[in-house]
Image (tube, rainbow, N blue to C red):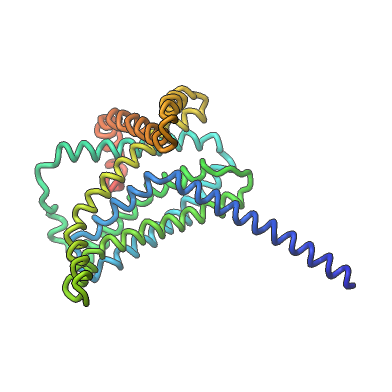
Length: 320
C-alpha cells in the first residue's frame, strides 16, 4: 500500500508539473498575443477619456466602470466564442480578418492626422447634447463608448488569435480570456488614472503637507493637457505602425511575402547600429506603409462605407 501511495503521489506531482508548465505556456502566449495588439490597446486608452469629458467629477469613475463592464461583455461573451468558432471551423478566414483589422488601424491613424491638419471649423456642442439631461447624456455616451470598444476589442481578439501557436481549443480559450481580461484591466485602469489625475493633482496642490508635494500637484495639473495630447500622438503612431505590420504579415500568411520581405531587408540593413535601430527602422517603414494605406482608404470609407453604416444604424459606432 505504501509503495502504491508513493506511486500515486509521484503521478500527481508529475501531472501538477505538466499543468504548471501548461499554465506558464498559456500566460506566456497570452502575453505575446496581447503585445501584438499594442496599437489598438493604446488607441483604446487614448480615445476613452473623451467619453467622461464634461461630466461632474463624481460621475467619472462610475462611467469608466460602466464602459469597462461593457468591454468585458464584448470580449468574453461575444468575441471569445466567435474567435473559437472561427479557429475551429474557418481558420482560413483569420488572415483576411486580420488584414481588415490592419486596414482599420491604418485608416484610423490617417484620419486622425487629417483632422489634426484640417480641424473642423465648428466645435460647438451638438444641439441634442444640450437638451438631454445628465442621466440620458451619460447613457448615450456609455453606449457610444461600448460600440467603439466592440470594434477595438474585435481587432485585439483577432490579432491575439492570430498570434497564438496551438491546436488546442481549450488553450486558445484560456489564452484569449487572459488577453481580454488583462487588456481591459490595463486600458480602463489607465483611463481611470488619467481622468482623475487632474483631481489628484489639484488636491495635492491645495492640501499637500510639503512644498514638494504641492509643487508636484501643480505640475500634474499643468501637465495633463500636454500628456493627453502626447498620448493621442503616441496612439496614432502605434496604430499606423501596428496596422502596417499586420497588413504585411497577413499578406505573407496568404502567400504574398514581398512587402514583408522588403521591410525586413531594409530594417536589417540597420542591424549594424544595434537591435533598437533595426526595430525602429522596421516600425517607421510599417508606419509609413500604414499612413499610405490609411490615406488611400479615406475616400472609400467616406463615400461608400460610411453611408452603408448609417443606413443600417451603425453610423455612430466608430465613436472617434
